[in-house]
Image (tube, rainbow, N blue to C red):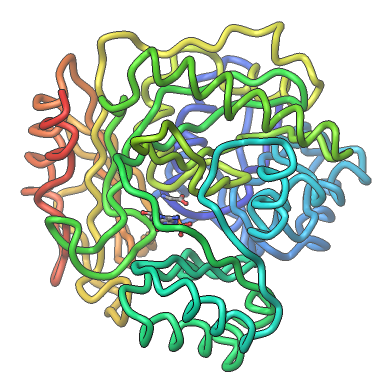
Length: 426
Ligand code: AMP
Ligand code: GLY
């Protein structure tokens, strides 16, 4: 089969490397891809959100199957457009992608179908929102822009002042454009966080191995929120008992709710969960694989990923095996450009990689690299994800951090405490 993977980060690299293990794959294109991905797939210079050119490329090149990985093209309807051109895809259509694209949609869905989540109110008027926060007078309070906001649309306000500033910048200054036409104000929850990605074909849902993200830029969960500075899998907080409860109270009810609303979800449904003292609750849904969760989840997948993707697109997920390695751990340490998630320099030469962009002992997933004259250069905020697997979590972490000593570039930044909270919970 000839495949097209849309996107160009570490997540897409992890998807491509797993797809390349399938005997049914003849060729993979990736648009736009990146320097590291170019060693494993043919990169095509089309932007991930350029629906017209993406569909035209897929038709002209007789693509048999397309995987749309990032949230923006999913929310914009790339899967609908591909299907309209008779190209089967892995990924939700536009209607189903609202589960991530609109927080108001997601919260109202959970309320209507009794799925546990933080209590909330929706506002389209900034003054009403400000009055509500003042009347509640409970801090921290959580303020979320309705639409996509590059992962920056959630503000945990510690004081009235911070809350007012957040409402002002989202709704009046339009910091995130139309994504801030409405906001959700919700209750602050506490407890360990767990990411669960799942395969879902509209009716059947099969959760993948659980994982733990590290969102803040600095050690000890300090500093700004980022796309994710590292992950481990499985997440030790996610016991069999918790998994059973989540299946009954969250996963199946969500799949049935989307079906009942006339927008069955087919693709990867990501549950961002918090294990609160009152049980597991949904913090957020994503309509796609997480990044860098995918970089620890897919290395533990034993089954054929292409078979699963095709089965999902045909509504036959119950007919294929989905098996993960047992008694194995994965750890991913992200190397970022100094200054990320704010300003950072690009174009730094990366040391310690072979000609395929790899390094012994780990799998190197490229998030933001360029390949020029036989060298890999940095070209983004998150640059590389170094993933190691092992029989124990400490071993996996040791292998990943060992590789990080040789794979380096000027002003490289990484967190030194990836997996430490997970180790404490083991
Ligand atoms: P998001 O951008 O939706 O992934 O949210 C970013 C982070 O904000 C989450 O990973 C949580 O740590 C935190 N968060 C979001 N909603 C809540 C909430 N209701 N209570 C506490 N923390 C939250
Ligand atoms: N790592 C979090 C996300 O992909 O949204």
